[in-house]
Image 1 (cartoon, rainbow, N blue to C red):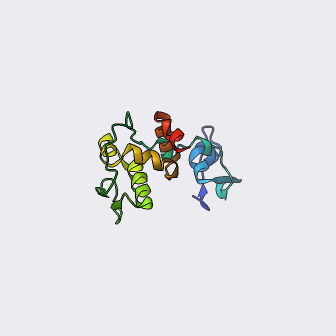
Image 2: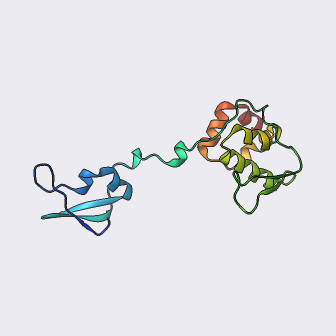
Length: 157
């Protein structure tokens, strides 16, 4: 739309600004309109009226959280191979004795698990508590887990 000419007629037959007709579309693209006699020209950056109302995927993305930490029964030692449904990267093998591997495994499972059974199979409650504060998680996922399990914050402190 940037740099193109758009002509819209209002209900009364006069010209209507594209941003008046499509305020959120225009706002999401960050464009402004300029009137040139018989037409409106989309100029570029400027209009941001609807940006605050846009919902981002990260704000609504589903995360799975178990009812209790005790139901987590994943391994505490050894090597774990994640299924491709959870980890589709070339590195799907994680050594739990390696701190970087452990954190990568837990971050992946916490982000990608869609069923509580996946959490139960791959997460250990003691290891989870030990690494919780060092995990790089989406804010909403962290908030959901800490909301249900405030002991994760207390144990890590």
